[in-house]
Structure formats: structure tokens, C-alpha cells
Length: 277
Image 1 (tube, rainbow, N blue to C red):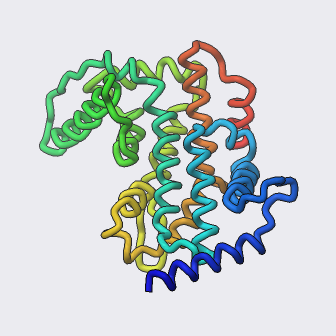
Image 2 (image 1 turned 180 degrees about the horizontal axis):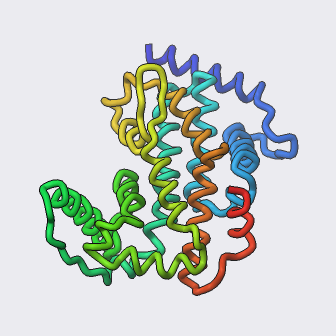
């Protein structure tokens, strides 16, 4: 059984090697290299070069991995579709952290918390949820801290410009004061980011947010009943197609955050991204 399956996969790879053309300019005879070059060209054109060149190197590598894996899945060489969804979601997680977490670690470390008087049980629960996010920020900003999960990043985005959070700490007020000079609509874009990440992607009989897709795709026992091809198509559209263009959104935030750290106005590339959104 195993030998037969391996033989069938070998035959499929041979067929791909014969049929896959890849970019016309590719001098490489190596099949996987040709597929990866095709993936790089696809993402550069799909996202635009100005976005593609600004994502983290590991993110660009994972986007190409997702392209290559999806091609091999369609050719029935591979069989686990959730790996593509996981790769795309990890890119969202990394780029979101670069946009609203990584540049502000010093602020997180210095921030102080003061629990306000809770007027009701509802208010007490709201304060507790914000305290959990505050503790996450201080933990991830330590020398040994781990980057927050995509689910935690959603709460950071939601509480970025939040009156209750501002009652508890000056953390976000101080960050907003600094970053808004470089990008006056920065907080509005963070709010849009939160909405996008909380908006369910829908297929027949299922609705999952991107953080939920990330969690389901990372745990094989939970992915069996998911229509992964439909979710993958929707995630890809969310990443690069209007009106969301999620990667363009987070790249703009990353560029604007760097400008704020340097005390400068956004550069020409950031301005171009701003005008196109």
C-alpha cells in the first residue's frame, strides 16, 4: 500500500516536471525552484511590488511556501490543505505584530497600570479583560518574551483607542500622541485592522475569523470538517484584494510606526501606500 502510494506520487511529480513551465525567464531546471519563482512573481503582482518588498523576509518566504504547497496539493502530490491556511495566517500574525506591537516594546515595559473604580459588574469585567491584554504586552516586551498570538493581537488592536483602557493606563495615549504626528489616521487604521480580524470568513455551513482559522489549522484533530479550499481563497482575497487589502494595511502601519519612532514624517513609499488605500 505504502509502496504503491509512493510510486503514484513519484509519477505525479514526473508529470509536473514535464508540464510545469514557470516563468519564461527562469534558467533553473529544478522543479521546486521553478515553482517558488512562480510564487514570488504571483505575490509581487498580486500584492503590488511596494507591499511585497516591505513584508518581513520570513513572511515572504511563507507566502511562497503557501503558493508552492497549494500547487502540489492541486496536483495531488500533497494532501493536507490546512498547511496552506496555517502559512497564510502566520503571515498575518507576524505582520500584525510588526505593525502594532514590536515597535512599541519600550512603551510596554515602562507603562504603569492603575485599576479604576468599577461602577458595575460589567465594568469590572471590562477592566479585567484590558488588564489581561496589558499583562500580555508587558510579557511580550520582556527580553525573553514571545510575540503575542493573533488572538491577543486582536485585543491589542481593539484597545488601541479605548476610553476604558485609557482610564487604566496612559500606555496607548502616549503611543497615539507620538504616532499620530507621523500618521494622523493611524488609530483609524488600527481600528479597521481589528474589524477585519474579527470579521468571520464564511463558507457553506461554517464561519471562522482569521484567528480561528489559524488555531484550527494548527491542530490537525480540529481541521477535519473545515472546507479549507474555500477559506484559503477568502484569506488570499483578504490579504490582497480591495476593499480590505490586509497586508497593505499592516505594511502602512509598520512604515508609519517606524517613522514615528524616528520622529519623522512618513516617507514617500508610506505616502504612496496611504493614497492607494
